Length: 152
Image (cartoon, rainbow, N blue to C red; front, top):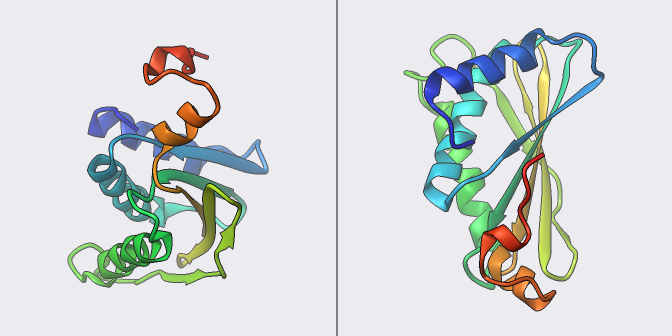
């Protein structure tokens, strides 16, 4: 999310402390580099997740090429390298397990489960082939974001 670090902390704390909803969706967006950094932020922050909270994180990202498998492999490798960093996870290293990718035409989806000491988080990586802007243009949306994005 395109917010300040303290706002990310507040969002993650709300996700971790909320006991009312059985599933709490978290959507990460932004340019590719910012989005990848935000994935690492959530991987780190969600280490405090409790077993009674089910968190699902949707990561919608351009593949930036037709080689969507390589794009996902790089993203997964980035997460694995991040959780292997002893400076980031000095006491307990979460495990990551990803299922087979599902190709749905203009999209490739991968489900990965991160298992922390006290809980787990499902990350669904949806990669748009090759770009979200191109996909939206093919459905008649103009290149201007305002034509398809409205505030909630």
